[in-house]
Length: 113
Length: 110
Image (cartoon, rainbow over all chains, first blue to last red; front, top):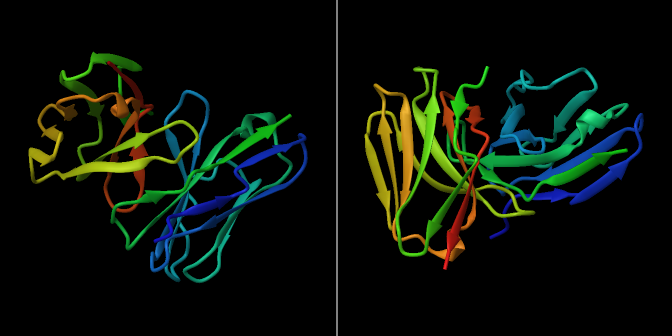
């Protein structure tokens, strides 16, 4: 069975440009999470979607970050006016339900020049 | 505010011996703890978990111990194998969000 997939796997962009990262969760998983991992640090929670409930955006670092999810499928994380400190690996995870074990995708490596 | 800490950035162990990875947490409200393993250029892979109502959970070569009074958990791998070389993250949750430690790099030497 397919796991969580993310695209692109790598993205290099110039400071000030917008980027869009995509996540395809495991089919049937109602919960979807976005995390960020900066170099040498642990994973940092960004946002959480559960079914049709309002997303938990408490981890988004600034209003330049936003995310959407279509039903219980694909999610996109958008970073507007990228800054160099946005350079990180962005990881998506999904779980069968709230509080269940999270399964991660391979991540998108973002480099802002 | 680092709620989950892995104080050892790296650990080197001889093949066949025991690997012990440690993790401390500060939030007594956490009720579920997990260990993830991560290879380079891959996402973290779930390894083993433990609920706060237990003090030990075992799965093959992997055992997780939880000491709630000390707010400490550990992962034991025995016997260690070269393929276990990876970054190990502990994570804690109450509800939906996971809070991760910074990770420990484990190197198993053959």
